[in-house]
Image (cartoon, rainbow, N blue to C red; front, side):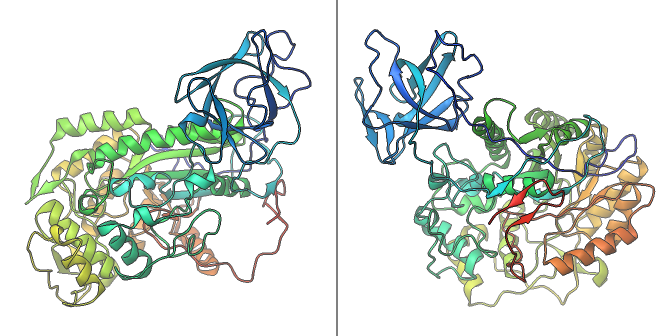
Length: 597
């Protein structure tokens, strides 16, 4: 996010911070008669307690299971975790027992205050118990992925102070919901923690077409058996080419934030065509329905991190909706999270046989809809041609699979023409009649082709013939009016050229290329209007050279900002391990956080 023109969104490029670990401790029995008003139903988190009834009997609650680690499952909701790795579970009719696995019957909502007295209510049975929390010792540590970093980076001297640090320009924190919600193994958080969020068994996600697509993307072939065991062994996952498994668990994001990341742009992402062929799914395939589901998830993650941090607003993960709010959040020592969208039928505006599936009134309504979700940036065009313009296309065998999706969505394959190499979109290949890609397209994904043979393309370089449509130009102007950040990646060269020209006419700096696909010529124009560019994440030496090259061509009258676009969880490979091997411990750039492993 960059630029300093009056109509643009100013650069948010960032400095250090971190949340103080919130432990629940007390020196006396916590009930309505004690002077412990600082303890709240939220600040119990991670504390060690025994529970006693506030009735006349004063009896202990599940005494054979406790004492209990108060592990937050959500804001004000806890798992009561015992030292023998058991969860206090309501078995019905007031019978409490220790179970080895968590469930809804093991989730307890804490109500009340220290002054009035606390009550716990079971989420499954609705059983309520008036209780006292008595500080204890000997609690177990809840199984969780550790950050392995100590220290508290400072916030800024004032809410409007200059900020500095690093920026993740393109991630997909909520991608576990894409393709119908049963394709991606793992998720960035779970009410029951890492063992449930990063499952030991990914086989439920590898059935039928789900598994064929997973194996093709992870290993290059639809029949290769995988060993995707998660917590706690992690045999083949995570890895730089493991694309179908979770890569953005929240403690990993926390670690990046402690290291200096101050802005994260996360795109709500999906693909209707690929969703449609999945054998197993529980979410609707409609792109905008998925956007609503994932936006809800992103806000739930913010609440979950708040729960781990002691209450509403106390977490380090803050969704922001304007650059001024982002600056305030960063100066509080927290991470500013920008919510975006990356789908092909954005606002429901696909096209079929060159007929757009929306109009200006629907665009206006759609913009109002996504703004209400907290979205402040999106891609007018993604992997398929749509009512707004042509796509950049994707090269190679993966491109052939996506092209089949374009056939399904629009009624035609990508139409290309020869063009100069320096502005080409993506080289298209003619798929052999046999092999892994042909087997996938003629097998699990055959419905995408609708009986059509795969296209045969002329020699490269290739450009998509489609450019910005009249509806696309209307959308770009509306995004400028509403100060929405325009993502140019995935636009065909012809589409991007026209879209940036409109931004130039309006002197609008809210133009972004944050992870791929744009040409160096376009970078110059984006920089010239005060926009923001960062490359995909890559090996260290190459990444540094890209930084030098971009700095050299940036516009001197604007502050230069730079980050990376990992495309994590977005079907993009990551760099391999850093060499030489990192030595521990080491300190963050600002020296305020020490990483121990």
